[in-house]
Image 1 (cartoon, rainbow, N blue to C red):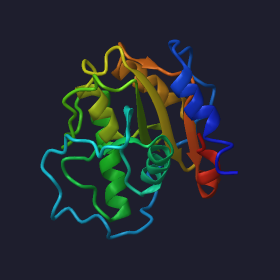
Image 2 (cartoon, rainbow, N blue to C red):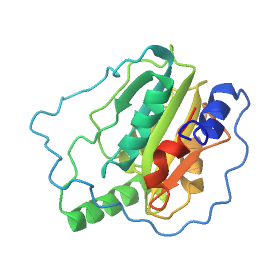
Image 3 (cartoon, one colour):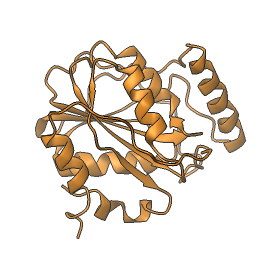
Image 4 (cartoon, rainbow, N blue to C red):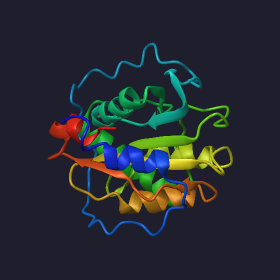
Length: 215
């Protein structure tokens, strides 16, 4: 059962060589960042200053990059990494998000507004090169209908390095669609190929993650 449903996404991503067409027609609704699954677990006392080296897998052709606050996107990223046995790296904000949910909401809204003005919030993650990767899987939560801000910053700052690469998007959401974030990815990385199939798990489908993410 587990190996029947991440087939459409991963196989399409791995086999696709064509450029992505128009975005999906997902209906968008305002989406707030989800509450953490384990509030208080965000201990930044030993956070590395500049993580650059992905955790390696046996298949070095693929890289899973993810940003996660509540833990849902991290779970999905690890499921993809496990099934492809590939490299993985978390994209982290320079300043960790507050555990207080209302404070987090205020900050996420401020950061999204700043990005619309061309000001990207700092992150502490960078990658030297993507030369060895055939496909980069990019995962993030949907915040107010948009790609989470740390991943927007990452794509903005790594756009030139991702030029010519194939990117497969996956996201988690309470209810919002993924189409706006797909458009954002195309704008942020205009010289990369966004594969014409993305994976979105909403709050209702997250419990079935293992069966929705097979290869």
